[in-house]
Amino acid sequence: MTWVVWRQHRNQAYFAAAALAAFAVLMLITGLRMASQYRSALTLCAASHSCDNLAGTLNLEAPGLSAVVTLTVAVPCLLGVFWGGPLIAREFETGTSQFAWMQSIPRSRWLTVTVGWVLLAAAAWGGAVSALVTWWSSPVNALEQQNFQASQFDIQGIVPIGYAVFAVALGIAAGALLRRTLPAMAITLVAFTLVRLLISEDFRSHYQTPVTKTFSFLHPTPLSTGSYWLVSSGLVGPRGPVPNPTGITFSIDGVPINPGLLPSACRSLLFQHSTSIFSCLAAHGYHAVMSYQPADRYWAFQGIETGIFVLLATVLLAVTAIAVVRRDA
Image (cartoon, rainbow, N blue to C red):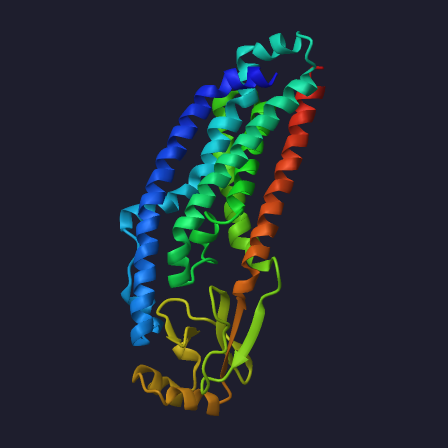
């Protein structure tokens, strides 16, 4: 059965392997150069005690290459569309499923072996791309403290493995239910994109309760070091939270300010860019509040999100099993 799966999907495997090899060569060549530049810059700035400004003076990434790395966010979706979508739908569409099930191999074993190998390949390809991107990005992550940024969180670490498994399982389930290749591929593309956006935009920040700190404008912002994730920030006055501005935005130490809701005395200082605005706000009972996810929660968030997508994939595989093994049995 394994040999049959290989014969059916070897062209896809060859193409994916060639693309991965080309990508690996690009990442290795440019990654080694970036790492060398970063080490040299660290040595120089350490000698002059100016490493605090390194992020503003050192540019490691070429714009075109950075765009290529960012586009790897689409790899799991492509695996789901082109590997998962046609996997079972094409069997139904062409009628070969009936021929396969007339052999001595029961459809449950056929499904288990076929889906198992494709899911394993998707996890391997997603993990390989993510490992290359994570290694390549390590100097930039250290320089810019960007690990928690959505554009980086989604393409590094272990979450791309979860995305790939989910995308392929989604494509397989869509194909088993619709029994048409093109509709299954289209549904996979749309559904995967919507689920990914829903999780990243509405759920990710709530995996753990954010750390909330309140501080006076007379003192430095008491945020932790490292690549923390600033979830929200705002101004609190004597009567409670001040609504954030909608439109022209002013900020003080990263805190959005709504000039129209400030005391008139402080408002004039804001437009004059005077540092006495800090004392004015403190005197009128205003302070800032910030909620953030500390940098040390990065891997916990990676694990939680990977688990969510693996769980969703498990549910989809159960739906697939019901559709294939029991339907028309």
